[in-house]
Image 1 (cartoon, helix red, strand yellow):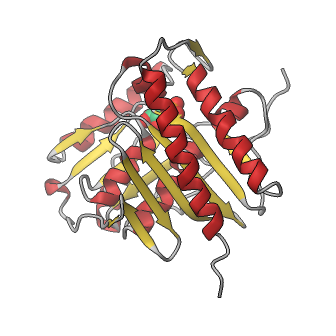
Image 2 (cartoon, helix red, strand yellow):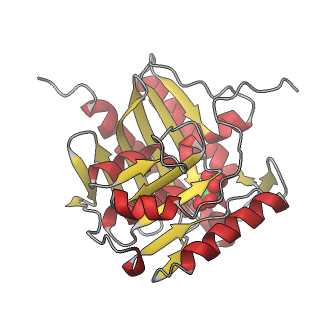
Length: 281
Ligand code: IPD
């Protein structure tokens, strides 16, 4: 049977490469920053420009497909996830890194049909690492097959978490209390690259055992979700229930034992879902 989504997958890789090239060039020029939800939620002209380029090329090639893009949603477009073929795009995952020249920035493109993720492409463009995952066909980095680590003992694990860009004191307290509890299990170390998409690829590569966060968005993790599961990993909600792409809560891990041990320590707090109806301004 012909592979229905091969053309879309190939296009995602082509456009991610092009986006990465633009990001690398933009890093050499002056970066114009504005803010979104708060003074630490940054956006640059590059985020907006790269998203426009990705969206227009997808629309041109697949006019019937739907799109959810970080900057389009920030500009007021609704985040509606339907059964239609849908591209879920973060043009610059790790915007704060990009602004500071911290060398982890990724282009993240996920693709879902009937709300099931079919493929994910994460281009860590400063490292020139192209991560891909396709449902049922495995996950790869620059053509090399990825496999999660086989560590089951939490005391031998390395974990990634992030604090995101919400500075609400109660949430920050819970985030750091969770990190402290996990660090003191003890685990070998806690890390964070500043891009959720790259963090998930690090789980898929076996460099860390898990990455969890409350407050991420669907565009940060859609592509990485396919890459982690295709590399043999698991995705769960932070309460141990099924993973929900729109919930803004996720634990990705090499196996269920590691995920469950982390989940025990997570101080959960409430965040608004990505697909929550938005107030008109
Ligand atoms: C952010 C990064 C970061 C994560 C934040 C995200 P952005 O995405 O993925 O690692 O901690 O929650 O919002 O804003 O750089 O696209």
